[in-house]
Image (tube, rainbow, N blue to C red; front, top):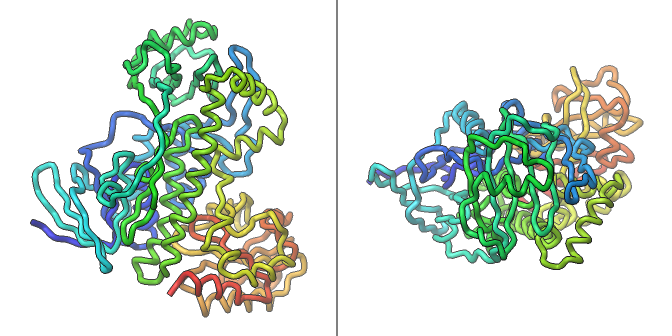
Length: 546
């Protein structure tokens, strides 16, 4: 029996496991990633990448090939029956990626695998976890390969990204509570050469007790999604193209040619949530931690947020620098995010599938209300994952340093880029305008030192020097100069200097005056610091790092 070791063993090589592996590899953490399947799945599975996921893929250095391979959809047309009731406007979201991207899950996985290969990491396929045990020193995992070979791996940490039927979750004995819905979903990816609806837009029809959705996958292929009511005589049977045509015909779409389907599938969705995201040195992420209905295309995207949230904390733990509070914050942040997502999915499911005719009537009324720009934006913000925040986290400034939080109120506006919030979208100006998520990196915190309208270069440099001396290994420093570049100041010895010519960055971050914003490696605000109070940074790092 072969015995080996690494820093982190990832079980499961879907998008979540691959994203975690890539984020860890960018921090020079030794990673092995295994998957019991011998090759990529031929099923397209999840096809929608949300704007927040694209921002994180930008930080991981893989967004360009993913964008090139996918189909951008800036709006979704919503119909009540055959009449268009509203248009959901993703193109008004404040992000560099104001659209939903449609891409077969297998292609997303291939791009992530290619990026891992560039870092010398190969997915070990046809390799399954059989059992594991852990103690205070680490985790011992017993693996079995398809050729019958056995291996024992000793690692400081193991992460289960192995899906809804997770072996890792089972080994930990974690509860996975929730419910299965009566709704019977049907889907196909099918070629439609004579598509008559707008090809670069999403289309959703709210019909009598079930929806019908059309998503463009490129190359004349479309995903068709519908559902059968609980009393359908076809419930549980594999769908046919004729069944889809029967749904489409009353909508005036029966003339479409449906040919060469890549798959036809039916299933009953469920929503289940794990009791704990972490047990000692073993953690779970993605579908191993939560499965949900496909009604708002949240599953894969929620899993990628899990991975990027966990990666930087795990990297510090591998190096022996993380306090228990930092690893505990993974569950404290991501579990509530899943609970919130489940609640919204339940609400939408009741509106779309509920047997109560009043609820179905309200669903159609709500569609028309979404023509109001503010409500439209609120709706798309909720499903884009851009609104996910950790304001109640035990691992941000408001919990770790209340005194520093109070001191920051004079320099920063309340309600804008608060600790725990996603970093808002804005551009910094150097040789060319650069989006903030292209500046951020998942290997360290980023400190944006904001000059304010009347820059005091001595105080700017004093804060940056303090950070360099106390926390240099943990922080990338960037100066953001309001108005124009300062003569004789480039900050090159302490950090890169950018210009904020229209003060858009200052406004987005809520800066009333000079100060600094500390951004975590997962692109959430960690703390806001007045220029004269660098000890706020010390309090944050002291609470989380050894």
